[in-house]
Length: 163
Image (cartoon, rainbow, N blue to C red; front, side, top):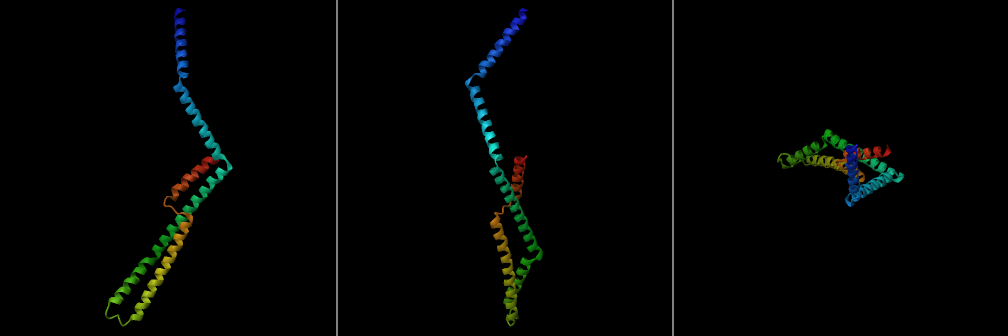
């Protein structure tokens, strides 16, 4: 029985020591910081669930998807321009025109050279118009190279908030 009393006294002493430490200012400050952080996290979660915020997140997602779509269209346009070899043809036409102008025997065929130069100018004008249209569309949508990443992050955030 004496050992039990000693163990009980020792356990009680340990419990009192723990209670004293829990009452220390450092522990109170830590608990207060945890409480503040928890409150701020709750406020953030509540604000993210508000209809306005859900709508904003959805709008961001839609914008990111539009940017991704524009990016794909721009890439397709560039590939199409490469497939048609428009730039190569224009370059070849300019080289041919330059050679024709430099050649002494072709100086008499000035009308042919003029026609070749006109074709080159028309080809370049068409290319410039296509590029202007593509750049104009990308300016309107704010095209970014990292559009795919932004879409994925926004979509993940939207789905997380929705769930």
